[in-house]
Amino acid sequence: MISLRDDVLKYIRGKCRGEIEYPWMHYPDYGVIRHRDNQKWYALFMDIPRSKLGLSGDEITDVLNIKLDDFLTRDFLIQRDGFFPGYHIARGNWISVLLDGTVDLNEVCHLIDVSYQVTASAKTKRAIRPPKEWIIPSNPKYYDSVHAFDDTDEIDWKQGSGIKNRRHCIYVYRAACIGDTV
Image 1 (cartoon, helix red, strand yellow):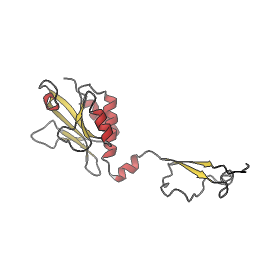
Image 2 (cartoon, one colour; image 1 turned 30 degrees about the vertical axis):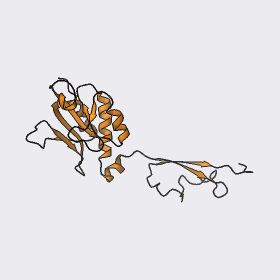
Image 3 (cartoon, one colour; image 1 turned 90 degrees about the vertical axis):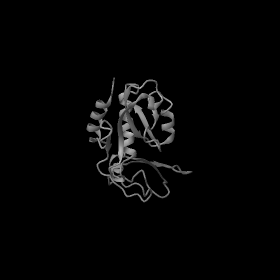
């Protein structure tokens, strides 16, 4: 039986610094990966009979349950080979992914990243969120955007209360006014 479980665990240990726990005595091969700060699961490994997923045969196969951020993505994925509605966690956006090679390892790793972000605490989400980009108009009647940076590398801008992070990238464009000359 081919299984990507070890490769997926290696990815999780390296990228998310997660460790697998085996909390169930009656299911010793079922393992969960939790966030360190909020203890929420973002990955659940199981070995189940293929028939439990509606597949032919009773051979045991490795499955990974992960949580997605939107129902449309979930509904799209479960139409593809190797993806199923969440086995054992059927509510919400959970899906089950076969780890038998049907789904490419890179795609599984990407989906783990999504699950990690979706289930993260607010503090972790802020830390892993990519920088935002903002586009802000500058009306030359009220602000001299052409010469604003002549004497400084940084300016205060009263527009955009959500712009708080220095990693954000802000684009200022100059709106044209009728009769405006540069």
